[in-house]
Structures are given as C-alpha cells and as structure tokens.
Image (cartoon, rainbow, N blue to C red):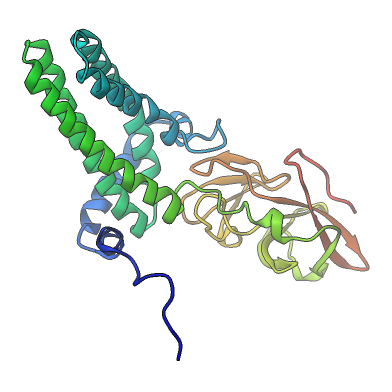
Length: 301
C-alpha cells in the first residue's frame, strides 16, 4: 500500500495565501487601480522604477531602507537614552518608503491576476505599516514616547506581514523573476536546425523550436534572420504573437520591447534581455546557435 510522505500539505497560513491567489472578488478593484497606476505620466522614469537600468526589479532594493531603519528604531526603543535617535530613524524610514512604494506599484500594475491579488494585500499591509509609523512619528514629536513606541511596534508587525507576502510573491509566484533565464541551461551547444527558410516569411514573427525550446524567428528584409527565446523574460508572454517595431518585437502581454539583433530589453517592464541566437543558412535551412552575450552580432549568411 502506498503511504503519504512528507506531511499533510500546506498549513493554515500557506493555505490562506493560496486561497487569496484564487479569490476573484478583488479583481474589479485591481482593474481600477491598475488603470490609475498605468495612467500616471512617468515617461522613462517608469523603466527606472521597474529597475531596468539595474537588470532586476528595484523594489526589493528600495524597501531595505525603510525596513532597516524601522527595525533599528525598534531596537533603540528597547534601550535607555535613545529616544531622539529612534525618532530620527522612524522619520528616515517614512521618507524612504515613498520611492519604494512607487517602484512596487509600477511593478504591480504589470502582474497577472493571481500575483496581483497577493500584491494588493502586500501593498495594503505595507500601507497600514506606513500609516502606523506616521502616527508614531507624530506621537514622538509631541513628546508621547510610549504611544510612539506602541504604534511603531504595530507598524513593524504590519510591514513584517507585508514582507512575508512579498516573499511569497517573489519566490513562490515568481513575480520579478527572469522567466527566460532557463533557456541558457536548456539549449545545447552548437548549431541546431530551426526549419526551412521558406517557412519564415519576411517581416513576420513566427514561432519555432530550437532544441526543445520555443523561439521567435523574424526574417528581416534584406536577408538577416533573427532568433530570440519566445517566452518574454518579464512574465513569459509569447513574443511570436507580438508586434514588430523598428527592428524590435513588443511583448503582447505587458509591452516590453526587445531588440531583435541581440535581445536587449529596450523598454520595460522586463528588466532582463531575451536570450538571443546566432543564425546561419545551410542548404536552405535556418540554423541557430545560442549566443552567450547580448552584444550585437550580425547573422551568418
């Protein structure tokens, strides 16, 4: 007889989070807030908030400052004679919370439903924490140290819960992860046949397979054939269903723009480039070889 191994499944905490992922009742609110976030005229600042210049999301980096200062303030609240220093740390955390929240909302607006639901509660918990810390700062300013400490402790609990949900969002639901990273580990070395050149009309994005991995193939006017991993690095959207724009392909899901010549992420929300392939034509067939650099390189003819 088979026996169950390794426990009885998710506990009450994880089970509650998983139910949150599947609950559809917040979706109308999510749609309204998403439209509002996307409507903010940020221009190129939006890519900065996503973390495109860093090559990974900026939000996890930015949250270290408020979390660090507030945790330090909690330690100082336990020590005598540190009232002023704790007050300064609480205020510093409040100031640092604004850019962290802006980056978080920019990322959240491009998430699919399951992740957006978790992310909304994550944001609400963190917002509650900010309000509690604001109350703590005001109380300390007015000389009510005991009240300030109590509010700060409640705020730390709120941002701790928000941080736990953020960890679930990042590591369980893979929000912010590079969804194309595995391609470099799946495609074998050397050249692989993609298909007859005639299968790839000029100026169209076509899905094909290279060594078991989906790719998007674009035959450009004049002869060059470009090949990128098909699944977008941001959220695995199918680039082969995207729009071709000035030597780039735009993801149909969230609008990330990738340069066909080398896979570079010209526009976010993707923070990582697409794996790119060198190509050549052999006996009327397109062959591709995984490129281990994102520097531009012309196709072999």
